[in-house]
Amino acid sequence: MKITRELKTGVVAILIIALFVWGYNFLKGMNLFNGPLTTYFTEYNNVQGLNTASVVTINGVEVGKVISINFNKEKAKRGQLIVEFSVENNFQFSKKSIAKIYSASLMGGKSLAIVPSYDGETAKPGDFLLGEIESDIFSSVTEKLNPLQAKVENVIVSADSLMTGLTDVLDVKSRNNLKASIAQLNETISNFKTISESVNNLVKNNDEKLSKTLSNTQVITRNLSKLSDSLVNANFGTTIKNLETSIASLSGILANIEKGKGSMGKLMTDEQMYINLTNASKELEELLREMKEHPKRFVHFSLFGKKDKGFQAEPEVKE
Image (cartoon, rainbow, N blue to C red; front, side, top):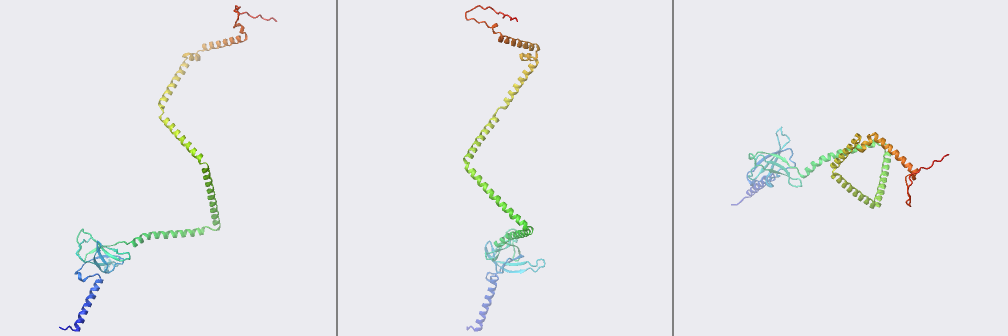
């Protein structure tokens, strides 16, 4: 059988159309050779650069593609985006699973990951899954830097306002006064530095004396500590008790003296004894005076055993 040119042209055209359809669907994420696809939906306010034909993964394994991204036509959800995606195998998960947009690479490409959950009712084709967006590195850094940037801007504005205020307040006289104060402060710092150097030299030159002084201080401290321990360990109770006993005895003696008991008491209270002692004192005084004036009357001494003639009164001298 002879194949005509028209038949050849028709076959080639059909092949070209088939390849075109297959390529178009492949670019859209649909593989015609894999049979029917299981499709699901999710919804976002912002898809963060997710595109049609972006990869869909479960636990890091590619299981499908993003089929379409369309705006929601409902008035209550106007502006939100509905993402349709496919799952090629028969992997089952519940309706509580999450469809999360994440960064597949540092270049910014986005993919869709299914975070499976197995609790509750199993998801069926056409069901909506909860959509989330995972923050990438740049987004996290930007989110953390935004508050810092705002604070830095506020600080710059405050500093600018402060400098403007200082410029308005500080006139020529105030500036001169400020310069003079700064100069005096510099001089004070210089003097303090000189004093500090003098003190350092003094300490350096008297290092040995200071060491001895510190050593003596330590010895005194140890002695005081020992004295304190001795005072703490001393039996103050016995000492105080003995002192009380002595005071009581002294009080008894003084009471007996006041009552006239004993020699001291009689001497203090007996008037006749006082008179007798006074007379005896006078007689003793006269006797001593007589012995001084006339010692011969009381002392007789002889080397040859001469008989004592007794006391002879001296003749009175007549005028």
